Length: 532
Image 1 (cartoon, rainbow, N blue to C red):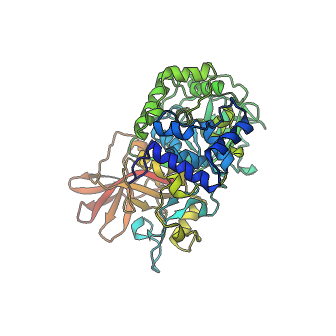
Image 2 (image 1 turned 45 degrees about the vertical axis):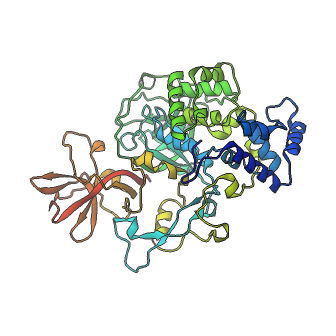
Image 3 (image 1 turned 45 degrees about the horizontal axis):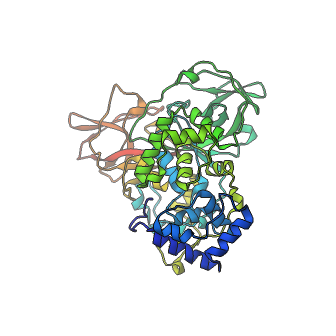
């Protein structure tokens, strides 16, 4: 279990005390809960909670199964999300692990696992009547304000977007989207943007087919066939017929692009050669679901086990490790996983949605509780006294309103623990995050329609690689003597700082006296930008 920042890990005695306090809130005893679970599910059901649960928990002989936690949730009316927290598990670690682990295939990041009752740091506009600069550190534009619960933001929990992480084996949109890019997809696709001609679409779409997910341009053949297009790489062009062989999930509208490490895409033989599409199907049993997910991801059992070991090491809990033999049993014998750590690991490694996996093992998330457990009992980080909680409007006029508007009114809070994995920075501050949304004449195609950039301020010695392609060139933030910033590729030549424009429009090369007329603030290691 990974303890919360600044907290000691809970002992089993402390957990038992919390469970008793939670049941007291509903005027229940463990004996009553145990009897009710037997009546609801039957004496031999995995959902049954034993009457000696406290004793077993105190002596360390047992950890509740995911089925027992679901029963606790249903009987008490408290959320399964919070019952997992009571026992040291955080569902948001699923996405955190998926972002951190290398992914050969494109996977959906389950934003629904975001804990809407968590508080997050928030900000307010700095006072001032001047216009918002084209490029500036966030520290110049906002100041810290009262932390807010995620659920207090407009539209929280009602997103029309899904998020995917582009895999290294199916980066058809390269180099516009690269392996590791996190792409927001709008599932509300207007009819007028659906491809109708044989020309490659201007927009990028997410489609699902028998081999997984593609985020790419499309061309249409007739009224029902779509062909994924990869302008730069030699993927086979396959006709996929809707709705039998493919599903148009949505249109990509925003990218969070990691720039700290450039991972080149690879084209597996199965996608380079022509392949015959098969009908889309949904596996509902746990064994076939896991096997299909692993085969789609092109992972061996040993590779999946190694990924689980990394999760266990990160979370400091050996219960998240799964051996190759255990994984084989789950797939071939259709064995139902019982430990909640196992469920979280399988979702993380196999890229399966939490709700879908629970359904496959007989748990309906809609039949569990919906009320939050109080913060102190749920081990939810609390920055405020509950009496000081502030849930007022988040969209005050000014810079913040403009930023939220450009983001479609949604902030992907579920990625807040993944900033280090995306950018390589351990603890990014407001000084490390720059607003770049006012730059109208970008000097690099990745900066066009940019919103925010994360900057490593330790990398202040600019390097330009003449022999490297554009997508591998480092991008820097430069501060000029007049106090304005610019973004672009640059290098030092004979003591001068030379800005290399990679814009499609003509830009005269700028030259500055290094550290006299301009200095490098740092290298951009991640960027958020609009795609449409």
